[in-house]
Amino acid sequence: MHPDIIEIVKRATSRYINNAVLVAAPSLLTQNDMIWRLEDAGCDLVCISYDSGDPVTMAESRQIKNIIGDMRDAMQAIGKTSLKTMASVLIWNDNYNRLDDVCKSAAEMGFDFISLNYPTFSESHVYTLGGEGVMMSREKVIDALTDAIRLKKARKYNIINSVVSMKNIINYLNDPKTAKYPCFGGERVLFVDWFCDVRPCMQLENIIGNMADIEEGDLNLPPCNKCNMSWYRDFSTFFCGFRSLSAFCETFKNATRLLSEK
Ligand code: SF4
Image (cartoon, rainbow, N blue to C red; front, side, top):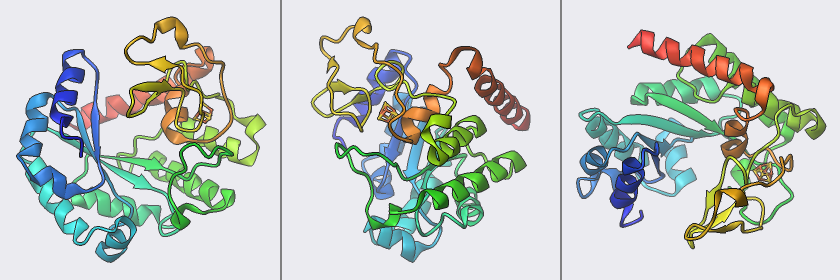
């Protein structure tokens, strides 16, 4: 929805920064030549929020009439470009025990990849996500992630979450002390808010600095284990020295498989 999204993508691309544009309202993609402008700007990936393949459930959960119809139109138009697409699937009360169905419908919609997000268990109130739909027990999230690992190993869908990270989150949810990979929010992963203030993540309230004057040396927060937020913890599994070998091996194997399938 940002009026300068194309300029932001162009600047990222010109600095060799891989970028993904996440859209919750797919009709935005079919207005103002947005898809073609994103392609021209060098966007790597268009992600669309996808909670369910059922049009009624989807319209209710996102409060957008005909959202699935809009998505079909957008996907059809994207199919005529070089842009890659990813369904950003939230695990919630409606689908936690039917991930196979939601992944199948996302694949049928034409998405190249699927990423799974899941409810965050955190004591922080800085950035609360979701509503009743994500008020789930840890056990339900563990069941869903166990199923996601099964689907990923069966290679039924192009799920990008790594098995290494999903197992780490299951361990965290069972007992935080057993999480093998800590989170490097504030050192390797960051959140930049709309004032260009740089924060370790969306859960911690400390501001490390501002984009205009922050220095590399400022990014030295200690490893953290305060929540299970996928966006920060998934990337952090790559920065744990020798322990990260399994994360790299899994990524390498997946990349090789995808290339061989092309
Ligand atoms: S575990 Fe990561 S995402 Fe969660 S509070 Fe700590 S730094 Fe932030």
